[in-house]
Image (cartoon, rainbow, N blue to C red; front, side):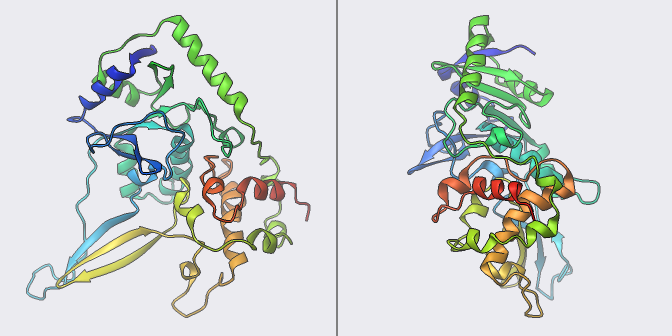
Length: 347
């Protein structure tokens, strides 16, 4: 597979030409933040962003999704029969996704698509998606993707990768799915060796700018109960206000709730994102709540990401190092410091 080079104007013009084959999502600026939006949303694509506030997780795993529907009309022959709600699995392309967010899909995939369980909606939407990454020339100072198996130009989980060379994009195809997308885009030219060399240099320079180093090497050898009962959890949780920002912004958090909503004689069963930071999340029907204290919920978040996931799947931590939870936490709780503390703890 050959690297191709596009001027930025040509790339944008040709992306608009594949709307008939893919739903194309691109980064756009919305107020003070960037987000992913359809290329025909009316907002100008902006590939100069550092990262979006919300990851594109929601394009595969919607924040709120109708999973079933039913009729409450006794005159309806299908009354009270729960049926799967119609869903859209048309091919979609997420263009400009950062490598950390693409890796996050791989981390989450272990939960939604494994030998024991297979979430049909997540899997179908993921399989209908092609991920066209954009390497990070200027990683944020809160990023630590290179500590958790990724990197600012990591190809993990991507179908193709863009290198921003200034006035042009070098496009590197990684998978057959990525090749099919680039073929559909068309145009471009074979990248000259000086462009390939420049792309390589940009990647090395970006790696050199990654200042956050987070140790995770000892987590798998720790005894679960030693970490669970460690004396530092009250201190870690002290400032937390249980706002849930960390969980909603996290590209690897997957907690959800199921709710029924009925209006008139029609009802919907919805799956909504939820947060382990909320007291109601673990409230049982009996009234018992195994995590009714704040420190228990904060501990659960970090133990899940940095110990339970490690032990269950043996595939690293449940974190792609995007740094959003560090950047947006209103009380400055820093997962990098918590991880280092857990990694170094001797019970």
